[in-house]
Image (cartoon, rainbow, N blue to C red; front, side):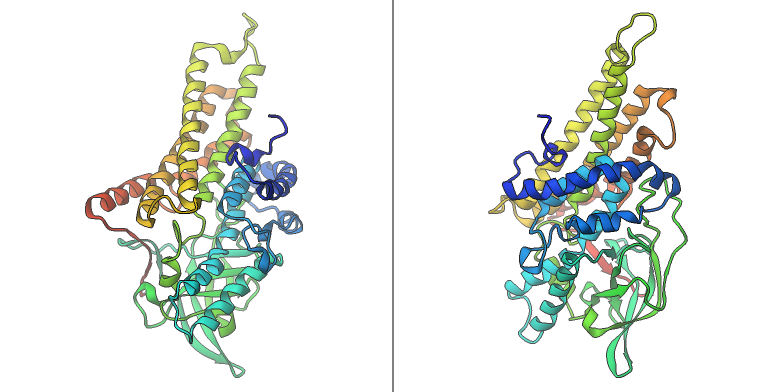
Amino acid sequence: MADRLIGQRLVDDMTAAELDRAARVEAVLPALRAAAEQADAAGEFPAGHVALLREAGLLGLVVPEEYGGLGGGLRDLAAATFAMGSACPSTALAFFFHNTSASRGLLPLEAIDAGLFGDADVPVVRAFAEQVLRRMAGGTWLANFASESVKSASANIAISTTARPATRDGVEGWLVTGEKSFGCATGVADTYLVTARLDGTDTAAGLALFLVPREAEGVASRPAWDGLGMRGSANHGITLRDVWVPATEALTVPGAFVKMLQCSRGSFVGNQLAITAVYVGCAQGVYDETLQRLTGKTFADTGRPIAESPMHQVIIGDMTENLETAYLWLRRQLLLETSEPPIAPKNEVYRQWRLAKGSICENAFAVAVGAFKASGTSGATLHGTMGRALRDLSMGLVMTFPPERGRLEAAGMVTADRANDLFASVPK
């Protein structure tokens, strides 16, 4: 139906409240689409998009209404990143990572409700969690910095950034030092949400969270990332050199990180499947444009649409199958992570995600490859929709973890009945 919102192409059974939130997303898409080519060419996040999304109320999309947000959930976020991905994947990616910050507020509250914290720790944990949520709802853009270049054989994300106790002007706090190699909205977000290891600890129980103002002393952006795809997401990362953070802006309760993780339905990174919705939205966008191009152009000798040639019919068939396969994996994962009551235990949901992420991204990339083949040399421009999509969708093959690692871990879970740790603390 022509009047359907773009987000409904993914989440086709939206409630009335979800439709209202999706309409807010729909309203910003023309501006995102108009700025996409320049953002990609310049390799810069469009600064005006922060105000655009803030004024639309979307920075609080997944924040509960009691904290001033729109009250959306994972279905809303997936529909939003899908729709934004069809217009500007770079903006969609940065928006996704802002929203992952909400998990650092929602999961601690769930852990409190589950009785995982002692009475003495509850006020501190609650204060930090509510602070994160209220700031997001109030229009603060949070850049979620966890990833680092250091690697660990036992986990997907290894943390070597450290925090040690320090007092400044009689105020207790922490000095944070390290380097975050990847994180969207570098130099753009108002506040950086930084994951660090408490000095002297060497397990995930020592991981902590810090709210670091973008302009804080000791914070610097890493060199601009001249990347292959998602070039307008400002994801070059930051360095921190003895950055002082007051204790009220940190969650350093021992074991809090692990306890929060226990309450997630899927991955602690926060609504992680919504990152693949960016790729499916991008794939849908390039698919639509390719079909329009091929059905609108005709052969000079026959006058028939190029799309009707046997070769193009094969390519279009492959693209359609790839796109539908990506949808199937994504919608299945969305169901597993949002159904109430849950229809599968957490270990099965997590195992499915390890398979789904790679399969979704591989099939989305295959759509772009098909568009490249079908469009021929006339469509092989670097900054057109097809050229951008080919580069943007290639990032899904390596971001977070490649498909091969996901399948390896899923196989390990099946054969050894164990889960791979998401985070590890790595001493320098």
